[in-house]
Figure (cartoon, rainbow, N blue to C red):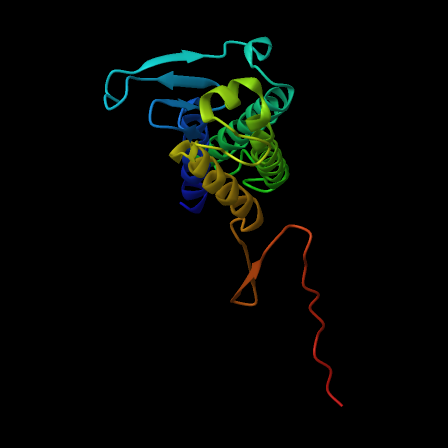
Length: 200
C-alpha cells in the first residue's frame, strides 16, 4: 500500500514536470509568452486566438544558456520518469520478487533528477539576455524580465523541483519487527544493535 502511494507521487511529479516543460507560460507579456520548448503569440486583448510554435531541437533554441537549461530540465525529467517507473514496478510486483522494494537506486535517481531540474531552473533566466527574449520582453537582461512577467509554467516547474527533492529525502520508512516492537528505519544503512541485559 505504501509503495503504491510513493509510485503515485512519483508518477504525478513526472506528469507535472512534463506539463511545465511543454508549457509556453514561463515568461509572458500581454501578447507573447515563451517557455523552454514552446512559445505563443496572440493579438492584443484576444488571448483565445493564439499562434504557437515549438523548438524542435536544441539547434532551434535561440541562446546557449537556454540550450543548457533545456538539456538539464529534459535530463531531470527523464531521471524522474525512470524513478517513477521503478517505483511503479516495485509497487505492482509480487512481494518476494523485488528484495529492494523502494530502496536501492530510487532515492539517488530522484535526488539527481531534482538537482538537474533545479540547475536548469537557475540557468534558464540567463536566457532573458538573448535577442529572442529581448524582442519579446523589451529591455530584459540576465535575471531581469523587462516587461515579461513570471508565468505559471515556471512556478509549476519550481514547485515540482521542490517536491521531487523532498520525495527523495523523505523516503518511505522501513519497518522491522524486533521483540514485538515496531522500529522505524529511515534508510537501509541504519541499524540498531540489541545488547542483552545483564544482571549484577
